[in-house]
Amino acid sequence: MSADQIELASPPFDSVSSVRFSPSNPNHLLASSWDTTVRFYDVATNEQRSKYDHRAAVLACCFSDGNHAYSGGLDTSVRELDLQTERVNHLGQHSDAISSMNFAREQNTLITGSWDRTVRFWDPRAANSQQASHELPERVYNMDLVNHILVVAMASRLFHIYDIRKMDSPAQTRESSLKFMTRALACMADGQGYATGSVEGRIAVEYFDPSPQAQEKKYAFKCHRQAIDDVDHVWPVNALAFHPVYNTFASAGSDGTVSIWDHKSKKRLRQYPKYNAPVPSIAFNCDGTKLAVGVSYTWEEGEEGAKTAERPAVYIKNVGDEVKPKGWTASS
Image 1: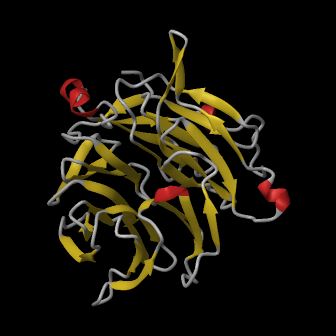
Image 2: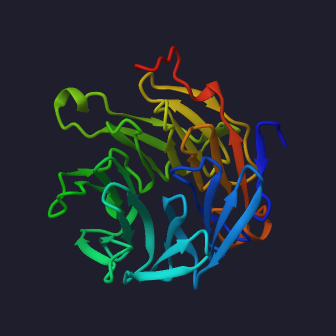
Image 3: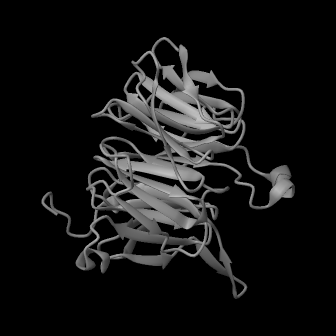
C-alpha cells in the first residue's frame, strides 16, 4: 500500500454502488453497497462508525448535513439516516428502484431519481415528506446537482436539465453526445456544465449555456481503453467527480484505473496506478484533499467473473498537485 493511500477496514461484502463524502467534514464518508448496507466511516481514524441495513441492494446515498444522510435502492424505500443516534426514518417510497439522490441544501430538499421514471422531492422535516413527483420519459440512471441546476441522465441517452425552483418543465432537453448508454454523470464545480461517461469508454464535456459560442466548447474523447495484442479493449466509464477547488475531474472505469483530467486544456493530468478490480464509484471530499475510490466487481464477466472476483475495497487517496490545472491561480 503506497504512503498516499489507505484501505478502509470493514469494507462492504459485495460490490460498492456509491461513495459520498460529507459536505462539511472532510473525513466522513458513506459507502452504499449491493450487500444491502450503507456504512459510515471516519477515514482519519479508519473506523466504521455505523452500519445501516436495508432489505435489498442499496444503489444511492448522500449527506444533507454532517449528521444526516439518505439512502435508496432496490427496496424502493427512501430512508433518512441519523448518523449520531443511528436511527432510521422511512420518508416514503418510489414504485421501482431508486438509482440516484442529491440534497439541495438551500431548499433543504432531498431529490431522488428512480427507474419508475420519476424524480421526487422530499422535505425530511414535513409530516408528509414527499413534496412533489415529476414524471419523466425514461428511467433515471444518474443525477447531479450544482447550485439550482439539476441534470438528469436517463435511459435511451436522454438528458433533462432543470432549474429546481421551476420543475414544471425542463429548462433544456438534450440527447447524449455519446452513442452508448450513459453510465456516469457529474456537474462542474463552477456550475458551467457537466461531464458524462458511457459504457463504451468515452467521456463528453458539456456546457449549460445554449449559445453557439458556449456549445462550440463541448467535446468528447476516448478513455479507459487499452490495446492488448493489437486488439482495442474498451471498458465502461463508471464514475466521474469534479474537484471542488480546481474544477478538474476524475474518471473511474471498469479497467481498474482512475485518471485526472483538465477539460479546459483537454489533457490528462495523471493516471493513478491501476487497482485490481473495476472502480464503480469515486468522490472528492469537501476540501479536495482526498479521493475515495470504491473498488469491486461490476459484472462485466457475468457469473463466471464473480467466482474469481477480488473482494470489494474502499481506498482513500491523498491528492496533491496532480489535480491542479497547469499554471493554476486562484482567479482562474
